[in-house]
Amino acid sequence: MERVVLTIPDAQFFLFLGSKAAESSTSRLKASNLLYVWKRLESSPENWRKILAHLESSKLLGVLAQLTSNNINFMIADPYRTLAERLFQALGRTRSVVFIHESIIAPPSAAPQATWESVELTEVPTEKIGGFDPYIHWDAAEFFSPPKPAALKFVTDALRECDVNVMPYKTNAELSLLAWRFIEQADKQLLFRVYIPKGRLWSAEADKLLSLFRDWLGQVKGSRVRQDGYSTPQGQVYEFYGEDDSPLGLTDQFGEFSDFLNDCLDRPEEAARSLDLQRLSAADVGDIVSRYSKEARRLKIDLRHAREAKILSLRHRLEDELAEVGVSDKEIARISEEIVPPIENFASALTAGSASWRFDVRTPTNITINNQVIDTVNGIVAQHMQGTMKMNPEARELLELIDQYGGRRQADLTSAVHELEDEDASRQDRISARQRLKAFLYGLGNQVGVGLLTAYVEGRLGM
Image (cartoon, rainbow, N blue to C red):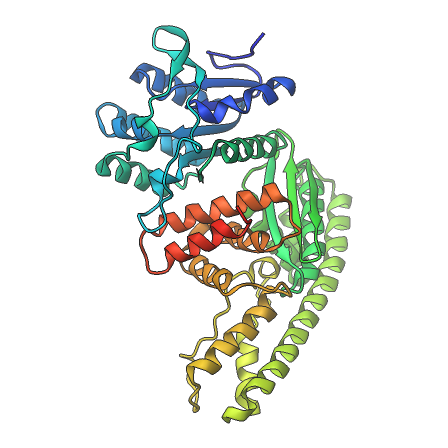
């Protein structure tokens, strides 16, 4: 018997909004004995209010939505406009993904041509106003006719402002893979995922730092968190999974952990006061502060040594390249010191080195460096700061755009570039990385070069 639930269940469940995203996933959900609720967007305002009620449920594992031209168009009409705003705000607050066909959201310079191969017309179960209609035929115009410009602008602006996770797709097979990957990660309570290239600044120390973080979450915060991932010759994927009561705000948690390590080094009494005395005894507090103080000292020494080694290596490479153009050793030493970031706190060990590390020629100097030398220096700096992975020029351009426009998603998008470039990484993870990058590039509109970079990302998997 199919486990489609039309009321808010009292057990954990997934919410599907739309049709096609659910069709390929429901059989797997039933095999895994997972509940799901399937709601149509082409429905009454009352049904939309039911959808919003489902989004507030504490049992909700995740939301998979699919927007088509048809339902985008009616979102600008009353009363759906207000309901759509509330819907996107709710999606931005929960674990969710919104699938939109690339022909709808891609700018003209990068938009693919929709074909019948990309959208199969099938009959799918659907909920109907006032009852349950077993099947509905999809309208071809829903996929091949672009939405009204005003409606598309309203929806894309709202998705961006609410920080909703948008995932473009081109084929049904792609949609199926991306949907199931999202379900797997949501079911396992994925809290944090990052790809760190080997050879990147502080990449070796990041492993120790993340292990300490996981231990701190369990021992100090009382959160059940497990660490997973895999490694390739080019890099390491780190994944943190939690239980039902685990915190989702790991960014804030990591900042608190970093402050705790710094306090253990410089203000141990402050570190002790920051601990939960209701959960921990005085003896436990003393042991925790003592142990983390020792680990923090060792780690800080390792971080300092890694930074000094990186500066020296960078300086030697720059000397080889700039000696013939009259750049003094003193200037090269200063440039090398300024390019490699200082260790302001332990959090910088993970966040530093993720940007593009462009050589800033605006730095006041008494020398003139031609553009060819600047490009050479940029390549040397990027290689030293980003790791040993050989990256194409287009990938470096992507990192520069992410550094400039990535915002809150900068770390995730940077990981996506490195994972896409790593041919030994999981293929399904590389496909997901590719689609996240395409969503980012589509959001930039018709800026110069975006179409070429989109084509590069599209062809990176040979598909």
